[in-house]
Image 1 (cartoon, rainbow over the protein chains, first blue to last red):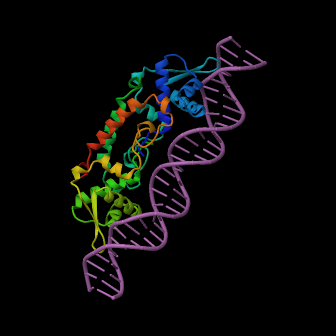
Image 2: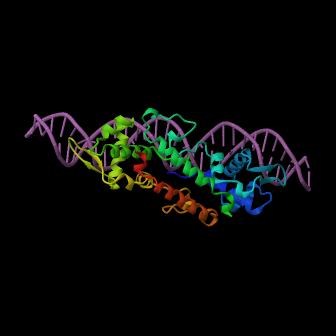
Image 3: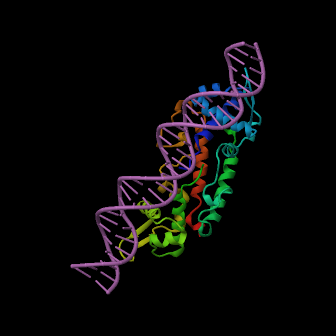
Length: 130
Length: 130
DNA sequence: ATATATCGGACTGTTTCAGTCTTGTATGCT
DNA sequence: AGCATACAAGACTGAAACAGTCCGATATAT
């Protein structure tokens, strides 16, 4: 379907939320205000943290804050952090072997298209979501 | 995973094949030469036909030919013909109602990104695959 | 201490995807 | 006329991905 996963969608919403507020927000706050499942969002924020986009504070009065400026967080980065693989076709993937390898006649042009799309998503950042 | 379906991948390969050969090709020919399941490819070609990209001849010595010039067939068109929905997020879809409608805070920018990606895929045609 | 929050993994139901199978229809060739 | 070829069309299946839930553990401010 060529669609971003809900994880990415919710991740973007959460990052936008953090950027707008500026300070520390809890998962509960973000999930309530944006109508997102608490448990699901919690996992997403953990992944974003591992990626270095946000940092966390445990315990009472804890939560998450941005670690980067909004304009430093591109959609590409969010996608890479939250989706296992990100390649238009099997033959443009770095992690997979093309099952039709020898026979794959569209690899070259697909790679170019992939690159163009990546740089497009690289040019859009959380700052544009504000 | 933000990946084109196998249907689109095979569709592109098949259209490239038809463009290269110029004349009539059977499903069997295309599937054999490109290592694609016959049955699956057959369905794909039927869909491409319904979309007006190719035309078919039944019976002995039948098969498929292009109905359009390769440069007239964009990747967008192939995707639209073969994938049920094509929108980055639920909120940029024309056919769906956004389940988080009122709360959706990223709709605008996502629509822009969607447009940019569409026009990118619109600028690449079968002619570029030759 | 305790309430608040993140951390982390297991688990489940649903949907999508890729591929197969079967039956029917059209048509060129002998 | 009969047959082999090739498209037409839809039902069906197994596997994978997705979205979401649940539970127990850890850290920390008050």
